[in-house]
Amino acid sequence: MNQKFTSFSVITFFMMMLTSCKQDSNADVGNLPVNMDDSSRIIIDRAIAYAGGYDEWQKKKTLSFDKKSISYDSTGKVVRELEQHLDYMMKPEYRARVSYMLNDTTITLIHDGQEARKLYNGKISEEQKDIDAAWNAGYGSQFVMCMPFKLKDPGIKAEYIGMLTLADGVPAQVVKTSYIEGAGSNPDHIWYYYFEPGSGKLLANSLNGKDQYWDYTRYESFEKAGGLLLPSVRKGYKADTLNKPGQFISESRHFNIAFDKELPEDYFKIKNDK
Image (tube, rainbow, N blue to C red; front, top):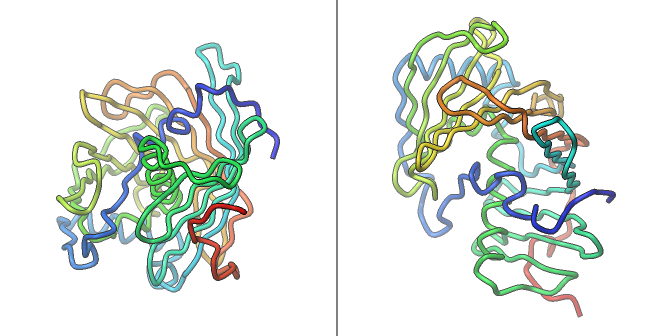
């Protein structure tokens, strides 16, 4: 993989630590309730139908794709680029493998269903910061990639908060979501999703985190794979409140999206290379 990527920019893969929503592997999250008011349920169901339908989504066992992340400075100049390959097992249990090159080092992040580790040139790191990075990066990328289907995950709370107009003049219906205790690692995070009235198409989202952190993401385009529409281009902006994008700071491009690829039996096993 080719990339321009400075060493300090490994910090959370363009705010991935902020956008992750990992689940506790030891918790029986499947039994947690889904709490939605009638309006938010209708809007989310419509969005999922637009993207291909929940029944079709439930059939998928694995998801693979390539991702290019680009970071920009205040003048719009590219300051960082990172190319990754990501593979997920979604059924019967969550597993993840993310790989990329950082300078001359091969980085692999693996979640085996119970624990996560970061490997440098095939060697496992036991540093806590690397364990946290492996855990969060895998969950974070899957969470944003699998919208709007993730909005029916166990433990979610959803509330319709009304209509508004996006910065580009497009009207949108807004659903506020969060997660009950045990469903996510970031209880301070509140997400706002903007949907096109009528079609249900996902247009954008805002994230409100700890210490009044805000960001804004616009879904620019989608790619069809396995009968489903998944985000292919997402653009990120600084923000200081709901639906108020500021400086353009990042872009994520997803491509070569494929479901149910045949993966080696030990593909998600955490082991040192000999």
